[in-house]
Length: 140
Image (cartoon, rainbow, N blue to C red; front, top):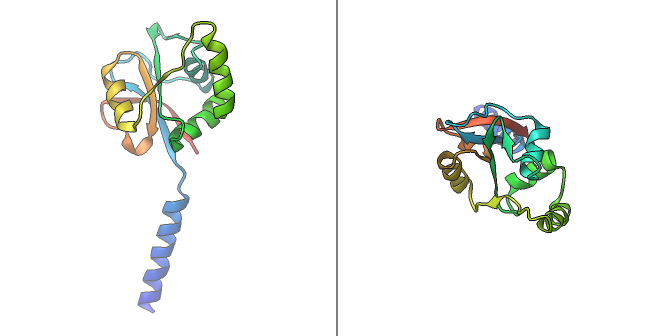
């Protein structure tokens, strides 16, 4: 009986951990003037419609297109898939505007955001540390 009870508890814990929604933190360095940002402003920043926020030049950084975190960010914030985003950036290129920098890991995003004034990135919430400021949270 005790073994069955333990097995059931383990099964419940496994199911709960698998079904837990991924939380994404949009972050900046602690020295930034930006304390929070709306979804609308975040979209404008990442589409480079808005280049300054609260008097500070902003530098958005992306994860690679195949990143699960980036896919969620695009869906929830930009409301675009890869094809729509490619069309958008092809159009913007003719106006002299390039897409955000792509960094190839969350670790790279964290380092960049900590060192570059005005940098904004997004990472899995579990990777946030004391040297980052969360300015927006996305729930999957």
